[in-house]
Image (tube, rainbow, N blue to C red):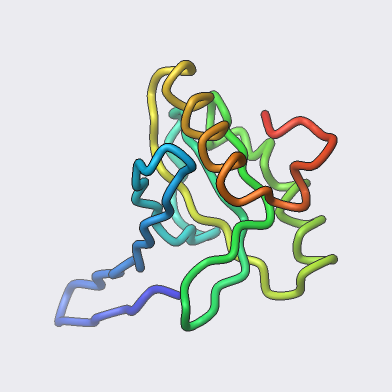
Length: 122
């Protein structure tokens, strides 16, 4: 998903960003997740989506206290089994209240199939 630009002595990765609207009308900017990059030990919202030329179709919306703990990995593997090339998009958010409100807003708008009847918290 990310373009890599190589200059002598430098490698710059340009991650793709997506705006995903919530039911409230708020727009949240998510970044393509690169599994081999350093994961900050910070709270984050994440969505697992099928990416098409029209943009992401959200299949799961979640949040975690610590992105580096990789508690989201099971949901990503399950999504890839069910939806093939599912991708993870992340957005760092420090406070739990903000993360939970954003997750709720996204679920209300997109009704992700993997959130139906289950917890979205990692």
